[in-house]
Image (cartoon, rainbow, N blue to C red; front, side, top):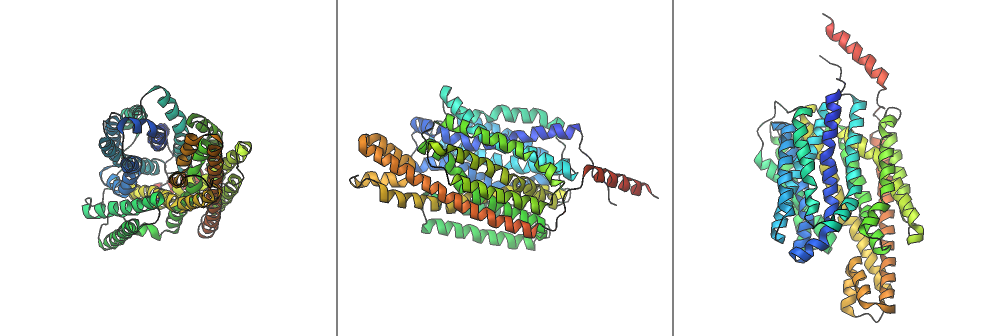
Length: 524
């Protein structure tokens, strides 16, 4: 018998406020560490390889464990997994803050990643179960997504301010009070949901899932750092092969760990692919913006963070209109139109060339951010709502995994193209009398070129500085144009494959249908 969706009450909306806390924290945690690298390097003295592991192991663990944790939440309860993950995240944060060696910090960052993988699918799947009415769920996901935006913007500002007064480990302690608040409020405000018919956790499938994403994302990030190599390609190939075996195993199992039938739903599969492509498109240029602000324009990390605050505020305000628009415009039209706007934003970023044109960069990030919001919000909504409520954890994990994979692909593929453009341009414009060893350092990274320019000083140092800034600007422009092309293609893709979906029902129509269903249920 069909029952009307139950409108959310005060408990659900207060519970949503609690669920925003982990999203804000994880976004914050992904940005603040990069600011602390010079400080922890001076204290722990990690090798270059150890420093890369300190930066990357967190993302590796999150990506690798998302599917497993999402499915585990369906089995044991999403609230239980969320609160357990909060305890683990708080403990790992304290351990990371007081690490006394590079090896210890790597291990604790890995623990943070595993704990972080429990938080995201749990929060999103709980939203799926708590908000049954379409328009309310869209609003809830909008608020949830705002946590990411605000956390990403606050990272450089808060992290820069804390490093002015405290030691590098203080940036990890930001997570402790947030997790304590979640643990105190969660049991009272968050209901428990689980799949009563799920089978026991399949450890073989779990290991295969972890191996798939660890292999693919590690290989992609290695290619982004060191260029194409046989080792990276072999690791990616192994990851893909394990993924193929994982899919075959799920199709043979009577009760699979991950239900591949979810992908037969066109709205689900289209949204997952579009989310991945959107993140892929914007990551190549977006991640270069802070390097541009600091390395090319010479701003401090704190000032660079402040420059991005207006874009964040406009993006947050713009995102609040998405639920209103979703009740008036079909998802396919709204999402594809937003992506075309994002392409315009990428185009504006290509006009940035020095402090005099900073306005173009700011305008580009604002327009880009607003344009991707319908895809981020409605795409996520479509993924979790297209799946049965009992599979909400697995669906939420799929959405987050698509984003992680898109980020890794964007950094590896588009980032590598940008790095190649930087090297080619700089090799033509560096002073001819610069020693070969210094040229190699300058060609490797923008940071290396800036250090060489500072050491040399004088006219030669100024020439290296101008050449490096020019080369990096061209790399940013190249990545922005590539991003514009990909989001334009994604706009066409979503317009074609989401055109069958209607706009959300107005509130009045939902109330009338709810009354009709209620009367129908009471008939003898």
